[in-house]
Length: 435
Image 1: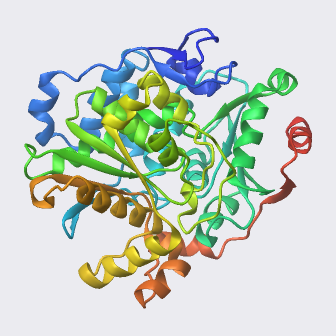
Image 2: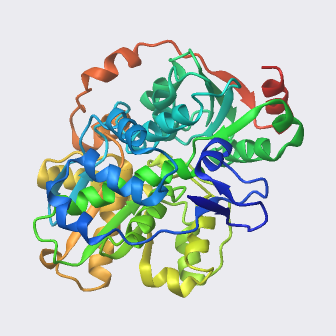
């Protein structure tokens, strides 16, 4: 598998280098040269595959001989001991992606990536330092996905006061090879610090740096798996297929574009955004103007400069009209999000997190805009997090407490171990250099 940088300056690399390096030196993002349709044999057998069998065939098709079959199968079997059920909620289907250990969809990417990196590092005697910026769920998924993986130390940067209590506890209480840094700023400040570190010559001469954000291709490959799994679970596969994706850094939606290139019959993707409406404005005007993110109820989507926009532009050759043909875009504010949570619970007795609510609103708006009959389409909303992670927000909206799964109880009582830090790169660099 050969990959290139979206800026087309850095040299091509193989999968191992792309995964361990994370970001090309020209500050682009790695993309595979080929994303071809899966063979007919895959589609003929899809209904009979387990999730892991399906994931193996998709991964093998993408990465070729970069990982031997036996090792790839072990990575997938170890990573996925949980399900992703498709649940009917009103007129649409909700793909619940929060049954993993940290109750968020990012377990799919982080657990695969942690094991893939471990495989690539098995004969390496130099520690890899993974830098991660998180606006919520990435931190917990990466922390648990890489916990105690030999040869890897993880540093997680997160914005102070802008993640939920449970999200914060999930990545600040672990210790071991996981360090959490509480940045006085926004997610965009955290992401800027990580990107600047990758481009700093002195840092890279001393440390081996990599990333576990969706800027790393090893996060996107496994996130394509559950699009196929949603399709597998549909009763009538002949109906037009639409996915509404709660979108922040756009890794999740880009993974869906990968799945479509591999032959998944997606009629259209729906980018459902919160008040951080940079992509929605681009979709309307053709002008992409990053701006400082604002805090919302759906905090994991509070991104003012989505990294994976570069990959999307590469896929669509910077043509906004091509983007519009394949992706619809909507934005919703806090009031609309809160109302959706309340209404869905009242009508269907179903509890959703704020991000899932934004996705549900996106599907409803798209169907209304295009005068579609929801009974004659497959409308799938990606549910990205368990509502308990936002229990303090959701409970007043539904009039009852959200039950806490047993595996979260010990985390809630854990001691916070984070390091407070300003959003100054020199301060962050000095801390890294002292390690």
